[in-house]
Length: 191
Ligand SMILES: [Ca+2]
Ligand SMILES: [Ca+2]
Image (cartoon, rainbow, N blue to C red; front, side, top):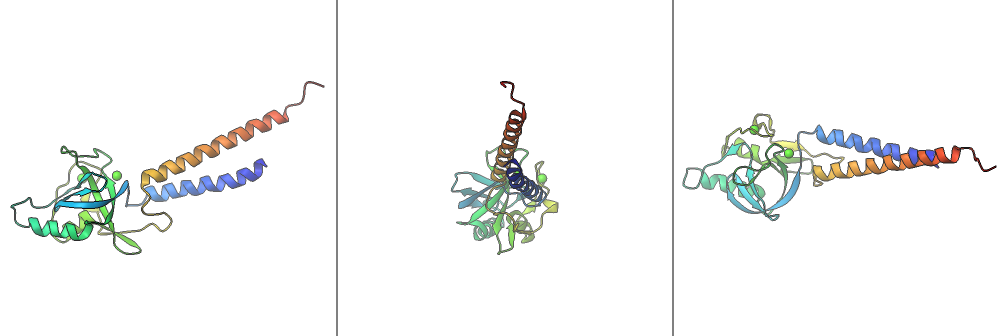
C-alpha cells in the first residue's frame, strides 16, 4: 500500500518541481491576467479589475505633446478590450501614483505573445526610461514563446500555490505512512 502510494506521489512531486523550474527560467513571467477597459495615454491604461497600469521603463508623449495621439492609438489597437498578461514589478509593484508598474503581454498567435512595452519602442511611439525595478528594457524581445506545457493564462502565483500545496500534502501523507508503519512494526507487549 505504502509503496503504491509512493510510486504515485513521487512522479507528481518531480513533475511539479520540473514545471516550476521551467517556468521560473522562462523570460516571460505572468503575475496576473486582466482585461483592458480604458486606455489613458500611450503608456497607461485601466483594467476591469480596477487597476491602473503604467507600462514599465517606457515613456510616451503627454497630452499636448507631439505624438500623443499616435502612441495612444497604437496602444489602444494592441490592448483595448483584450485579455492581457501582466508581469508586475516585483521590486516596488506600484509607482508614486499608485499605478501598477508592468510589462504587458498580449496573445500574438498560437505560439507567441507580444511584449507591448517593447512594441511601443520598436514602432518609435515610446522611448526607454529605465527605472530601478525588476525590468531591463534592453533585454526585451518583441515576441515571447508561449509555454506549451503550461496554461499560459494561469498566473505564476497560482502555479506556485498549487505546487507548494501538493508538495506539502504529499510530504504529510508520506510522514503519516512512515509513522503508521513504525507503530505496526513494534512488537506487542500484551502477550
Ligand atoms: Ca514580476
Ligand atoms: Ca528598469
